[in-house]
Structures are given as C-alpha cells and as structure tokens.
Figure 1 (cartoon, rainbow, N blue to C red):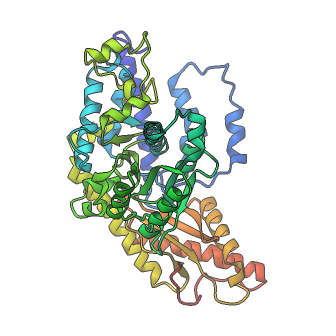
Figure 2: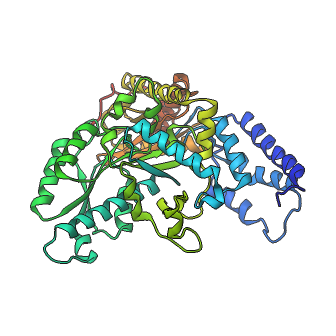
Figure 3: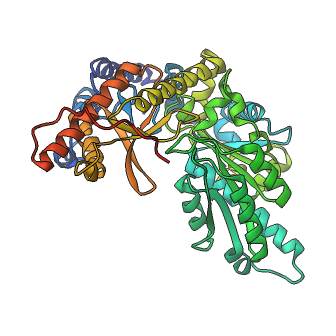
Length: 502
C-alpha cells in the first residue's frame, strides 16, 4: 500500500515503470507490430493470475511481452487512423499525481481542492465558449457520456414543457413516444445510442440531410422541424456537430441556432472533436454560434492532447443539471446543498469519478492555451496539405475538404475490370497496411462505397509521412487487383486522374 512507510518503494517502482515506457517509446519505429488477436490471445490467456510473480520487475518484463511490445502507439507520425492523439508531457505528470493520490470527485470531503480545480476548468471552458454567467458543467468519461447527459437534460426539459402546456395530466409513457431528436446524417452514433438508453421510440432520431461538404442543411432542418410540428411530434433537441468523426465538418452553427431559437428547441453542440478550436488563435471563428448552445460536448482527450479520459459537458443554465441530481443521506444529503458544499456528484451521472481535470490543469499551467491551440492548428494545416496532395494524385479519389484534420479518400483503379474491384482493394490495402505495422489508417463508407480515412492529430506527422503512406496503400491495393485479375504485379501507379467524390 502507498503510505508514509512505502513512499521510497513507490518512487522506485514507478520510476522503473516510467523507464520501461520511455525506452519502449524511444525504440518504437512503427505505430503497430501487426500482431493478430489469434497470435496475442494465447500469451494473455496462458498467464495464471492465481500465481503472482511477487516482483514488480518481473511483472514489468511480462507486461512488455503481453502489452507494450504490441501496443498501438498514437505518438508515431504514421498512426493516421482514429481520433486518438499523442499526449503532452504536463498531462502525463498530472496523470501520475491523480493516480497516486486517488481523489474521487463525487463529494467535497473526498476531493477538496480537486473539486475547485475541476470547477475552475469548467468555468474557463464555458468562458471560451461564451455560454454566459449562468453556465456550469462537469467532467465526464468521454463524448458519448457527455452527449448522453446533454440529451437526458433536454428530454427532461421537453417533458416538463409538455406537461406545462397540456390541458390534461400527462404521464411519461404518453410523452416519450412523441419525442424526437434532429441530427445530421453525419452525426456521431452516440446520438442514436443515447435515444435508445433514454427510452425513446426506435425512430426518435431523425437524420437531417447534409450538403456536399457533409454539413447539416439549414433548409432541411427547417423542413423537419415543421414536419414534426404538423405531425404532433415534440422535438426535444437539435444536435449540431462541430467536427464530424468521418469528415471533420462543422455544421452551420449560427443558422442552426437561429432555427432552434425560432422553434423553442434545446440546441446541443457536439464539439468533441472541434473543441480544439476554442484554443486556436486563427480558427476560433469556425465555432461562431456555439455560444448560443444550451449544452456543449468537449473532448480534451482529442484536440487538447490529453490522455484518456478527459471530457466535459457544459450547459448554458446551471439549473438544468438538477435533472441529474439525486441526494443520498450517506453521500450528499440535501443539507449540504443548502450549506453550499460543492459536491460534484450533484451534477454528474457518475458517482466515483477520477480527478481527470488535473491533466488539463497541469497542461494549461505549464504550456498555456495558446500552445495547445497552435498544436491543433498544425494538424489542421497538415490535413489541408494532405488533401491537396491527394487531389492532385491520379491514383486516388478524395472527398470534400475537411474544416478540421480528417481526410477521406480511396484508391481508384483505372476504368474497366479493375475499377469494379475498388471496394475490396481499399479494404485489403487497409488490412495489409495494418498487418505490416508500417502505418495505421481508418476506413469508412461514403454513399455506400468503401473509403479510407486519415485522422491527423499528431503535429509531428509530416507531408512526407503522408506521401509514404499513400505509396504503401497504392502498392497494396494495386497488387491485390493485379493478383485478382491474374496480371503481373502492379506498382500502384497509373490510374486515371482523381475525381472528387460527393
């Protein structure tokens, strides 16, 4: 146990672990080894957990074999797949401190200063967004939880309004089937998931059409709002996305806010990805309109370069957080609220909760917000350069230009029999690339067609890295097509000029 008598042992043990991780990172020359589940699973399942090693050095050596050696390393410049970021060192320092002290951020008597630090960071973020003096919020485990809690609050507000305007008493079971959520076709899957968890109808989430840049069409939103009104449905929330997962697109927040205001509907902005713009010195205007939201999701563990997990939900009106409040006599009795004791569990859907806010606190105190914003601007700049590179490369077809750091594209074989194999060639290229360990890219579908995706969150990824990965993809895809058609092995070049998708 960590205590006054074991502090020296703690220092030595953690130092050994840090040294192992540092040596591993320093020696990593690719983002992944390409190991398969079938290869790694026997190593893990073969460990007898009822026979401890009794020595941390031996346990670390074993950990090297079953985890560190084959981990996916997001810090590598050729990891280009998901919304996983390399992390800044001050945040790692915060992680070490919060893990050792082990504060739980549910009540004041378990966290004290931790409570105040989290609240200060919530205020700071709300100020950056521009939500106003009545704003509040709470740290969460990630964007999915933040979106869920936002929609929970929106549901409760909608139910309360429905009851207030009804001419007869309404129970919840009569209201829930009529509730609807409007979100763009490119919104995050957590909107659908939240609707299910909230007990809404299977068709409660209505997809609003997007334009060729994959942004919500305001005219489409207006039509859906009007249709719901005519059909006697209650729109409990409109979800705008500031940084879609697939395309990095930002919905027209000002126009969406106007429509929500006109319809009297809760306006939620999912800025889990695009929240890095809050710290940008050159691109903050891309979030204009977010200050009018009723709730906002931010993921610091994406575009603020924080370790997982570090997310938050912000709300314009602190009073709406009461919908997540439950007072337990053994934990947070009502008398504490009356005495203004700051218990974070009063506003969270979690009880026991890590002091994840400390990571962001240390980052801001060491580096400052401008430095974080500059890092995010670098990856957005790099994505724009990657798009230009792809757009001019005859081997590839590229989709709409992202407002953030995502690039969606595919290998495009020449017209004819090879073109018919484009889907499976791109799927194969992604798998072959991961198996080689030389790079990791993501995949998605666009209008039913398989595409590949770069998600750039590493400022050290260079255009040369991207060009190299494109050559590898073209090589894998071209060879797959040639082998399938029985032709001599193809080098991945010579396709028709690229056409822009969508």
